[in-house]
Length: 304
Ligand code: GDP
Image 1 (cartoon, rainbow, N blue to C red):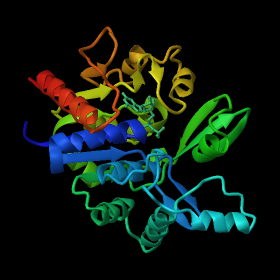
Image 2: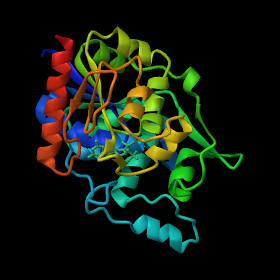
Image 3: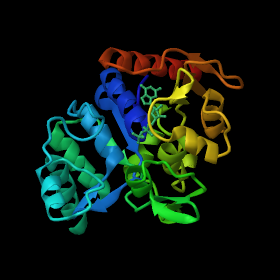
C-alpha cells in the first residue's frame, strides 16, 4: 500500500501497537495522540499520552510502564522534603521535558511543534501529533464533584464511581493541518487498543476529526483493548459501563466505534462487522510487530 499508516492512540495499549507499527511501516507512521489528559504541574507542561508514545517509539520507556528508563526522582524527593504533596510523580529528565515544553508554549510555539522537538531529540522519525493544538481537558464527575482527569486517575486511583465526564474546551478545538494531511493521505487508519471512552473518545470528539476520518479513502480498523475477556490495565471497564456498555467485550468496543470502523481486530468472536480474530496481547517486540502486521494486512484486505 502506498501512503502512510495513521494510528490513533492513548497511552499504553495504543503506544505498544504504535511501536509494533514502527517496525512494519517505518517512517510512514503517524500517531495521533490524545491530549485531553495533559496537565500543567511543577512549572512543566506534561502530555502523558504523546510522551508515552514517543518513549515507546524511541525504546526508552521504563519497565514501570511510564516515564523514561533509569530516570531519577531527585526533584520529587526534594519537593517532598519541602512539604509538597507530590501526588503526580515525574522523573527528573521527564520533568526537564515538561519544563522545556512549557517554555516553548509560553514563547508561542504550537504543541505540535513542541512535541516534534521532543521526537527529534529522541531520534524518532515517525510523526507523533497531538490531537489538537487547542487545549482540551477531560473532567470526571464522582459523587457530584467534578475533578480533572489526572486527579481522578492518579490521586484518586480511579476508585470513585463515575457519574459523568466532560471534555472542557473541545468545542473550540480543531485538528491541526498536519493531522488533516496525514488522514487524507493515509493508506490505513488504525485505532489502537486504548480506552475507547477516555483515550480515543477525546480524539474523535475534536470537531471535524470524525468527518476527516470518514472522508479519507483509507480503511479504518480498531484493535480491541479487551484481552482474554478482561481489561489489562486502567479503568477501561468502568468508563465503558458509564458509556452504557454493560460488558467490557469486543462487542462493546465495536459499538463505541459504530459507523466509523470497517473492521475490528479482537481475540474473540464479534458479530456485525468484519473481524480479524487473533492473539492481541503484546508482551514483547515480536508480538507487537506481529499484531501490527496482521492488523495492516486485515485493513488492506478491507480496502480492496
Ligand atoms: P493508559 O492511558 O495507559 O491507561 O492507556 P490506554 O487507554 O492506551 O490503554 C488502556 C487499555 O490498553 C486497557 O484497556 C488495556 O486492556 C489495553 N492494553 C494494554 N496492553 C495491551 C495489549 O498488549 N494488547 C491489547 N489488545 N490491549 C492492551
